[in-house]
Image (cartoon, rainbow, N blue to C red; front, side, top):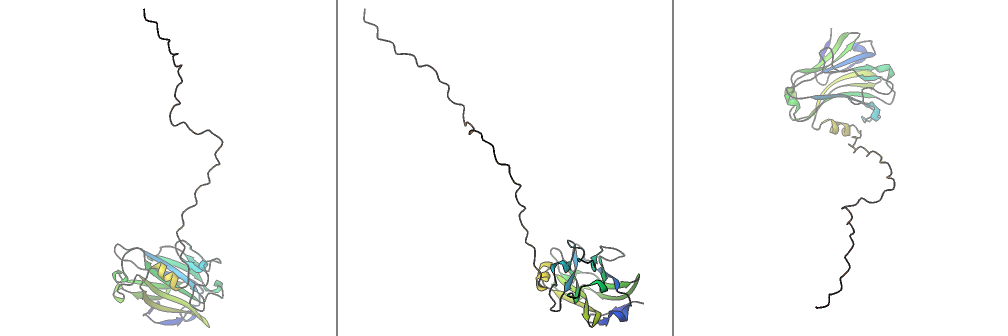
Amino acid sequence: MAREFQRGHKAKLSDLTPGTDLYVGVQIAAPGLTFDISCFGLDANEQLSDDRYFIFFNQPKSPEESIQLLGAQSGDTESFRVTLDRIPAAVQKLSFTATIDGPGQMSQVGPGYIRIVAGGEEVVRYAFTGSEFTTERAVMLGDFYLKDVWRFAAVGQGFDGGLEALLKNFGGEVAEEEEPPAAPQAAPGFAPPAQATAPPAFTATPAPQAPQPAP
């Protein structure tokens, strides 16, 4: 039977399940709002270990595929696969977050949760509602963190900025939008300049006639 966590609750993952290949599901919704749900792989200083460990819609898996974004399924807005025994030693924490894409604030969200499923069975769930937040535009939902062994913490901490601010908070770099390079143009061949107007036509000027003597 799944354990129900409140904000701030922590436990060894081994006390929840002996499994290390885990499914993490997030449910979050609000009328008219869309959400970006991400996972940050952080080092011992709680900074992004490597930009390749920022797992989101544009980068759906880490290099060794220990963290993978799976998409919406089984009633979850977003889901992940986390294989704990494949996570590199430099990554000491996985922080699961949700940010609002566009205007809005976290106080508008309905009942939501983050849950861990092992072998098809839900083993823990942390539920939250919008009443726990005010004007925040992001929320840190839950963490896997390494403290001699892997543990899980229900966080539920609001964050004022959106995804870009959260990325900066974790020491990541926001990719600048760059203009696409112009297509290379072929070198022009030789050609005389175009005539603006047709050249004037030349006509013979009539020769002046000698004056006729008076009769």
